[in-house]
Amino acid sequence: MPKLSETMEEGEIIQWLKKEGDKVKEGEPLLEVATEKANMEVEALTSGFLRKIIATEGEVVPVTQTIAFIADSMEEKIPEKKEEAAGKREKGAIKEAIIEEKKEVSEISKEAEISRPIKASPLAKKLAREHKIDLATIEGRGPGGRILKEDVLRAVEQAAEQKEVPQKKEISLSRAEKVMIRQMEKSKREIPHFYLTIEVDSSEAMKMRDDLLAEFEKEKGIHLSYTDLLIKSCGRALYKMPRVNSTFEKGKVISHLKIDVGLAVAREEGLIVPVIRDVDKKDLFQIARDRKELVEKANENKLSLEELEGASFTLSNLGMLGIREFTAIINPPQASILAVGEVKKRAVVLGEKIEIRPIMETTLSCDHRVVDGYLGARFLQEIKRGLERPSLLLMVSG
Image 1 (cartoon, one colour):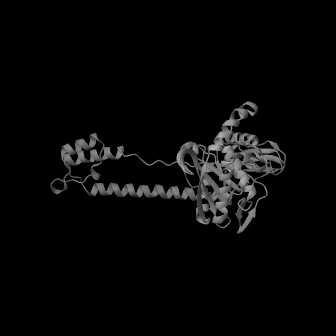
Image 2: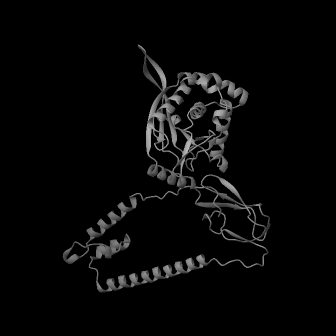
Image 3: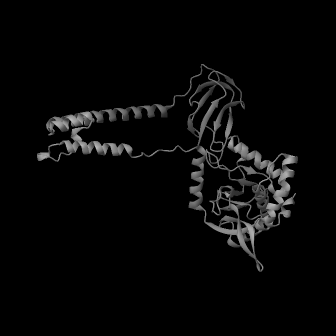
């Protein structure tokens, strides 16, 4: 199983594109593998015959573990997998030990039953047979420990109550969820987070979006969203403050020349973050088109590895779910992430007047090793400036 990405630890075999005995050429697609991020085709590393398939479709295999053999001919012997043979022997020994232990327990129980006669009234025995209650499990409260009718009825009632108690249910985690868990644990353990929140007056951004909405749908067939304006505003701020457009890798700050913004997308299989490239160089039409295409691919699980890697900044928008404000966890090796809440009408003081304005809460999570408080505050103010003067978002940097 090849390691197809830096974070990949295992892969699920979706389908074999060749069957045992088929002739394969180096570089020819051999099988399809699902990683934690995307489904990918794996090419043959050498030419020959697909001598033996070890891992079947649907099997999850750790990276570097053998999944098949390619040989010069179908008569060529393949290496014996010693670790599997050892594993089978060990499992067999464990199984035999368990069977033997069960036998011993059963024999001891039978001996105990023979040596200790159970005292119970005839009615108690009858009720125990009807309700399939083992008298040996009941503590008798009659004279000399004799089991009475009331003791059996109490045991029947307790058994019924236990059946009504809901049992715990184990939930299987998807590959994407497992990777997210590892990444978030690493982030909170290693990154010194701090948070900055600022209010944004969305009046002008809403006006411009409404003005452009019909034009977008008529000319381009694309629905312009507030998220598109947010992406563009983030790209503009990153262009002006390149230090924020950085990642922290192996004790060094790496500043990226390209401005690629990741957009958090929720799916049933778990959160995924496709990347919108060159945000500073694209207009709102292009950003809206890319965002629409990537979100559709994410929901259909059709994103390529290239569409999921390389972001140096992430935007997470939960405003459509009615969330007013939240703080997001940084996705390492990135140095910051912007969390955006809903646009909500509020009374605000403007000069000597009180007016109703659509206000949006935005919170920036920063890695203090890369972005200090002053830089983070200036960056957040620049995002606010772009959204409150949305005509600035119509400009591109290149």
